[in-house]
Image 1 (tube, rainbow, N blue to C red):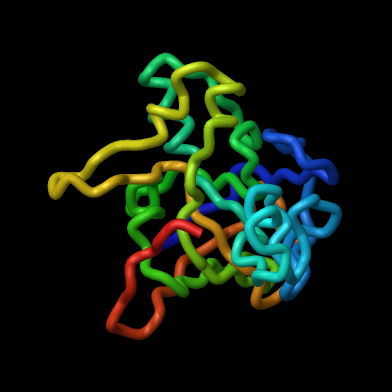
Image 2 (cartoon, rainbow, N blue to C red):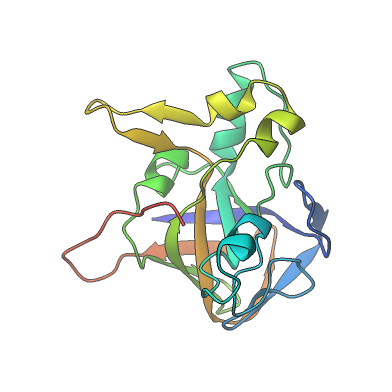
Length: 186
């Protein structure tokens, strides 16, 4: 499964949206250099309140540009970085938003620079999404054919190997050895 990086984002403050930048530097075991969520322990405010010592499984947030197109079809206007992601991937056959959230746990995203992000789980949408655009929270949730909750807001990961990432960089997904485990919310 191959695609390209569409855009990259970071923010040194804990804000909902992130600023699009020319490149980001992924730091092994930490996340995105200069981003408020970078560290070995959890940095997301709600998670810090629950247990500030838990490992940071949410160092990097990745979504597909196809998710932005999907919500645009529902009448929402969301640009890259506005959902708080660090990396927006280009729309690619076989790696759209549905395929991305269906990847197994420990899938590795290999970037052209040599950087590697290992997927740890699904981003759980929060009510801040409705503060960004009313009704968007509901659009980020769905039910599958078996009635299970589907979280559309992308995947989270940890940095296994550092490196610079920028728009246009090739990226490919490497699946872990079987048996595969489904991504759960982190």
